[in-house]
Length: 97
Image 1 (cartoon, rainbow, N blue to C red):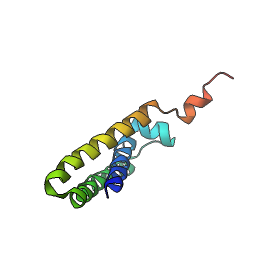
Image 2: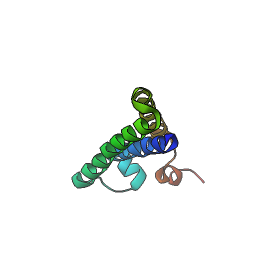
Image 3: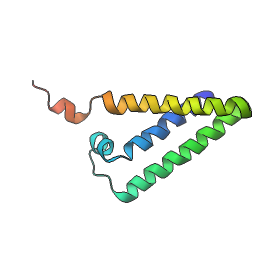
Image 4: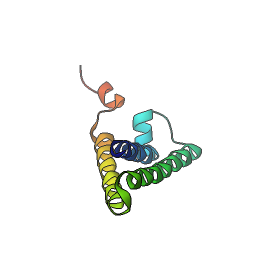
């Protein structure tokens, strides 16, 4: 359950990240439309709720709340580092050969 909660947290912040114009264009190569943004953000908020439930089931009420916040922080950090530091296909095509 704990690992599943961490995976959901990473997926949640990946959805939040991809719901921004810049990251969506960089990673998916498509312009972000309003309906797609709404779908991505709705999925992300559903992920926050699912992570909350998984943390409470795994750790109980007191430690579940603490673990939930930690899992969300971990997910945000992993996705932030990936979206901002991992090379994109546009980066590899600009290299001098």
